[in-house]
Length: 462
Image 1 (cartoon, rainbow, N blue to C red):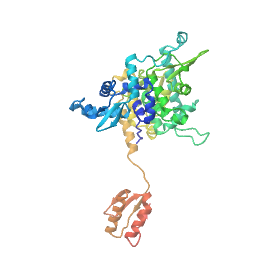
Image 2: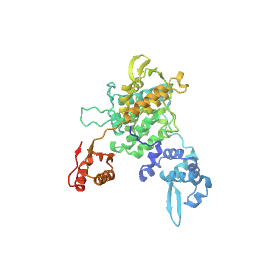
Image 3: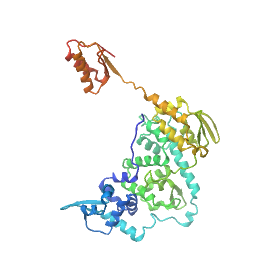
């Protein structure tokens, strides 16, 4: 079965995991404070607004009076969330009290009083005239993101060769999507997680890479707190507006090149100044995956027939290579790819860590509009067969073991069986014939135990 990797589904979960000192430094930025407030559950927001102009610590019993008895579970969730993000700080006097974080309190007061203003000053009108329109900017972000994923696909056995960005490859390796290169000229290969990653939706893919990018920022000499603050600030930037690069610190200016490689921003250079333009990808960063809509929500392109033929109406190189992961490509036209779901191609995908449900979900999610309204979208004969092929692979598991028989007495046999069961290595027992099978790594222990139980060692065959 494929491994399951649990990742944070919300940027704030990663913010809450920061050390207390770094989290308090983040609250010096008013846009971070607003992003944190925006992410809170509704009840937690109410508590923050109640405490916004309160200077003293509030006893816990007073907090409990704010919630009705039937809402105590939501009340506790709100308190826990506020504590995790250090929005409220505990104070122990005669009784447990909570005080609002003074830094966050100051920033939210200022934002509420003044409106906050834009995150950064936009560039001059002469520069704004050279900014690409929304359609061109979205096409740029789409091509940039496809180029990122194509570098991952290139590492598959049948993938095409192409130029690779060392930064992107390093992020893939740190995320466990590619194997680390032990030799200088050795190319990394796709892992089980890498194959699963290719079938995920765009927002999940982006978040997983950004999460690893932030986690490894300290190793690259970038302060993780400053990086998180800037990424949260990007959520307040207007998509398509140009912002001066000179308004950023030197460390963040270096980060812009890496964010541009991921398609989060577009960089442009003028005669005297340079600027960056946030894309639609950046606007979803501070939202949870369940709240944000899939950025690449274009029309579907896949038609699956009952004869296991797959017709993909696409000219995208990336989509073609993803289909190649679990189908056998028959032929390709400028805007049409014809493939077949075969037992060999599906077994290859299953062996790479992709599950049958992931393949079915991908085909269903990217169904062509002409078949997307059908029930079921993927024919039952196809989906059932994919699940059967997966079941066939999981039916039998091979494990090295030792076979023991010819015990002199039933008492010795039962003692040996109990010993093997206590060690957690008993695979099979047949009391009527006095035979058992034990994992091979316990053979030495079993042999010594059997010798103690009987004067002559029983016969053992592997």
